[in-house]
Image (cartoon, rainbow, N blue to C red; front, side, top):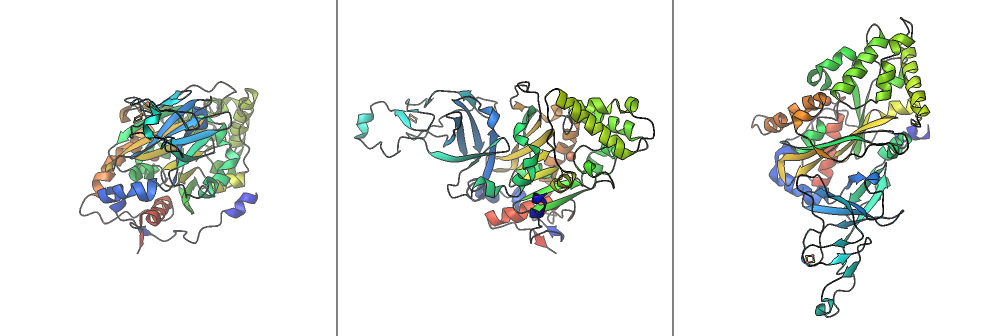
Length: 452
Ligand code: FES
Ligand SMILES: [Fe+2]
């Protein structure tokens, strides 16, 4: 695998223990400074390409004070604009109350205040009484302001910084490592969002490590060891599981349940995961897992159970036109199970499904965030369900996620305690926390993790 050679550990491997000051999580000044120093500088995942399939389809994406409209102008052209009317500053496209973002289809964008009208290329096409401006509405002054937009992995990415590096460079090496998974072919099974009483970093960090599994999700311990590594990857980081010896394929997400009879424990783990998390697996995998007991003799070694389970599910999916990505086991071991894309997006990838999280600030309040999660899988051509972002109260999320949520507000409260001396992430399993703060500090000029 050519790509493997590229994952040389950065000089800042972050293997040494660090202390992360609470400032980045709790300081109102820090949260306000993030607007200019962070959110207006980075590339942000702003939606899916399949959200705007037809010419004229648009979505909006908000990040603190800024809002962007992303529009499909033709089969090959996607444009993004600052969501503000150049006349007197009315937000151009309103988000319907209670919705995560606006979504629709229009031939032109018309401002609701005085009727200035814009084409899908952002150019002004109508100003009432234009002559009153005495010819001064030229040179783009009446047009929408352009925002840079690019696509990768099936997502629309925007940056508010005209000088930002190209997306491909920004996403390196995450994009190259994830390309073999064909994430652009997946479509959502569900998408949920909610407002939490914690900083966006607290929410993201609840999902970037496996250290919490044994305590926060004790039910999973029945199914095996979930010791996982974390690696710094430049701006980004990734995490993965240590594979049991001889079961390298198990280093990805498609893991067997541990225990005396892997046929039965795999079925138990799959059923439990489907019912309580509704992530990280598919109905095909669950279905085949439930037949392992009938289709394999007692005493079948774990490696063979794993192979049979995965190969059978893969063949059944192929028969209905769902073709899994083909990824070399060595690559699986390096790519791990999830990537934290700086600063606020996580992609939990697999060959046939993925689980993604994003958290954004709620205004400039350091104690609140907008949290969202989406589960994707491969569907037969034309059979993906139509989903939209559903506002979902914490109690209505899958139970395993509720267990994660239960820590969030409590962490936010704890970090404000005068006696809190800074976070001490596990240098092996929670290195993604150190990576995030090391990179944040480069943008923010403060808050760098301290070595002891
Ligand atoms: S503010 Fe948009 S037309 Fe006046
Ligand atoms: Fe968790």
